[in-house]
Length: 326
Ligand code: NAP
Ligand code: F7E
Figure 1 (cartoon, rainbow, N blue to C red):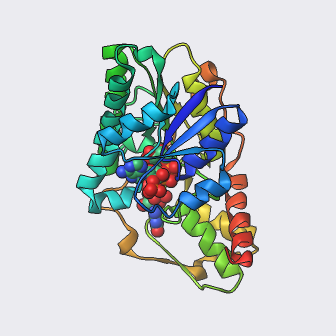
Figure 2 (figure 1 turned 135 degrees about the vertical axis):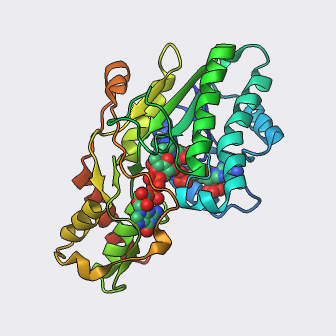
């Protein structure tokens, strides 16, 4: 039975990836941080077969211990301070976890496997945020990065460290440059879930308005369940590589708002949306759209959920959760 260790198991992608790997017959191990992590119960409820290891991306010895105890053939580094707005307010923490944390995992693997770096295949969760102020449209694997946030800068560091370990040590290290992917499990601090939760509550008469920042920005939004399959496919290739994972379609935050309200039969969405500079960013990523040709040709990967299906899935899930009082 192949074995995999996932950092960031409590996050949106960690949970979907754990389910995917368990379905494929893997022995799945997850790294959990903190002495009383509130999301541990969620992990135990959704993926009870995952074996838990305690550790932190900023703590090298905890990572070496997790590797020793799980003895994985594959390591998926999904752990990060992943909220872009928060990364300006916590620059040092973001750098420690999202940038240096990646290097710490790579070093832990190097120390754990001694000189046989082919023993472990490594996946790094890179991001379209690296493209920031885009230098070309659409963005592909060789598009010049121009990050616009401490989070984006940290991801650029992790991305190139991953490439460097592949080139320096011949490690099977891959980097998935994933564009925004969402789901009913998305944290409510991200705009899509904030909208789907807000629309559900407005529909059920529990709230009047949603307060948002910039409605004009455009993102390439896909479904997280599709994107974790791409992570696994990367590690099944004969050699490590870098792949853009995206739908190739772009929509504005306003499009998401309109589609979400329309789905619950509310046409006059303007009555329920207020803009507040509090949710504007010091530097914005105005438009990202990915070219996933390489992933389609080499990995045989393509998205299966459309923008409209994604919006409806998230709103329906939040309607159900709100009705049930979850
Ligand atoms: P998420 O829901 O925010 O999950 C982040 C995970 O990182 C959580 O499990 C969190 O644990 C963990 N973490 C935070 N600090 C840590 C530390 N010091 N040590 C160990 N773990 C730590 O993020 P996601 O959406 O699943 O994304 C997964 C990865 O893909 C992240 O690296 C993200 O930056 C990257 N990414 C995401 C997207 C997207 O659209 N979702 C796109 C591109 C790249 P706690 O629960 O304990 O906080
Ligand atoms: O913002 C605008 C905001 O926070 C999307 C992370 O997973 O994807 C994610 O980062 C856009 C931004 O995601 C609100 O200004 C308007 O332009 O949902 P978000 P993100 O910043 O794109 C990338 C690929 C990652 O790698 C990250 O880890 O929406 N926006 N009003 C708002 N955003 C938020 N959060 N809240 C608002 O009220």
